[in-house]
Image 1 (cartoon, chains in turn yellow, orange):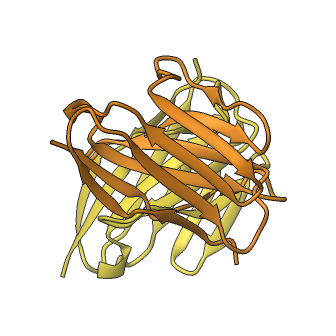
Image 2: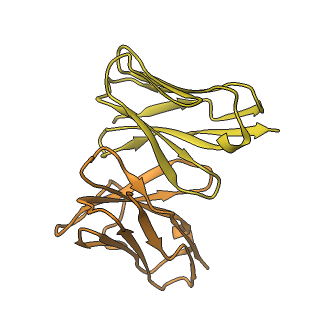
Length: 109
Length: 115
């Protein structure tokens, strides 16, 4: 079935460094979504990408959808301690939304 | 807007008892609600999808008779874990989608511990 592979599993960065997480699928995706889950919290919707090659920005966060609509990335510029959490990509699949395993980001001040 | 509440936020119960978890959309009508389960440091696994007034659709491997879902109104869905066992201990999260069906709004989750 539809699987969304996400890497890396963990990322430790110094505050101020950049961070990127990648999401890959073996099949073409109709859309991809990104969520953030703070430690002990629940997932919060960040964005949805629909168009091939789409790039969207939210302050220090840049989201990209690949030309083939099989991969996506989330890039955070100059990380801050408030960026700590797990970032999940999710895409429609056999279930309404299939989540990647997430990338756990820790930021060292 | 788009607030989803969940109650209780945490519960401890004895093995063999049943626990009911409520999920409410506070400021919108949720045509569809989803129930997820999340083990520590793992991703979300969809358990079932429920639409108001109809039977829930369960994912493969999820026991319908054990995890009873009721979606009685456009703002309320309940998950009842029947005859709970320690292996049912987990973080249960509901989500709801409204008019922008692709966007899911998650509740704060319920941490269930079965002793």
